[in-house]
Amino acid sequence: MVLGFFILLVFWMLGEAVTQLIGWPIPGNVVGLVLLWVALVFYKQVPSTLQQASSGLIRYLTLLFVPAGVGLIQHWDRLMSHGHWMILAIALSTLLAAVVMVVLFKLFRLPGA
Amino acid sequence: MTVSIQMLLALSMTIGVYLAAEQLYIKAKKSPLVNPVIISIFSLMGIITLLGWDYPQYQSDTQLIHFLLGPATVALAVPLYENMKLIRQMAVPLLLACLSGAIVASVSAVVIVEWLAQDRLLSLSMSAKSVTTPIAIGMAESVGGSGSLAAGLVLLAGAIGTLMLPSVLHLMRLRSDALYGFTLGLTAHGFGTAQAFDRSVTCGAFAGLSMSLTGVVTAFLVPPLVPWLV
Image (cartoon, rainbow over all chains, first blue to last red):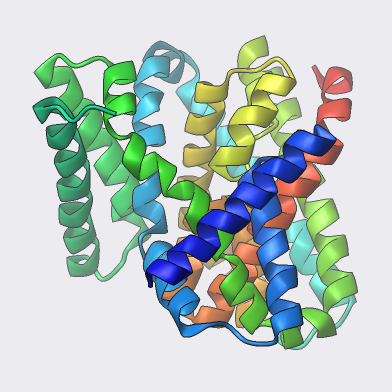
């Protein structure tokens, strides 16, 4: 499991290095995800230690959002004055995006769509 | 990093509140109305206010949890790899759906909130609302919005998406777990991915895939569009 965590850290570091070199506006951890994915495709299997480390982290993915979420407290006034518009705009755009996607899936006749 | 009692208190309180909220979620048969993240965030906001702590202090005390978001994002490569066969079969339609979904989700939110609220900082930050938190903060700042406001909007989008989408997708008769997850991950990023993993591993892997793709696509394509919208 420590080896698995080590692999994740190394790929994160590589991702950060790539974004800094190219000057991309994309976070290094997303580039790290893509790099690890490519590496696994070449390696053709998932080492069990990496399997353990990643399923442990993914299991508690939502806990990791909590500290950033509490930061909403800094926008309390805006939330009180415009909160209803925020919710309405998000709900409408979520609905629009989901409908566009499902219609595309159905046009392509994907299995289960 | 020096360890203080306040830091340990902030960390254990955050994890403790989350674990309690998760128990409540399980007791309520995983109803999205008692989403453990939303319950935890609002409880912790209350606790912090009662204790008289300021947010920047809490933020630096809980750095350890926030830090794990990095390796956890990289870890999403594992379920993606495990679903390679399905992804290969549907690569072109998935990419097209992701491109159109990501642009619609971002542009429509900016246009609607600009029209309703006329708050420039809010409209600009709204462009990053369906992008996973680590990407959203950087992206909102690059278009002239606020990173912490974007983080809040991302959270709201996640909560609203996980509340709405199960019934919307049921009404539209989407039966495939893979496509269900893909739609959930695009509109509700990490929240959607967590909910998708509750349904099945395939569903979660596709949610993780669309969350990552959406983050990259939105961060590349939307910033140049934003000046035309507000």
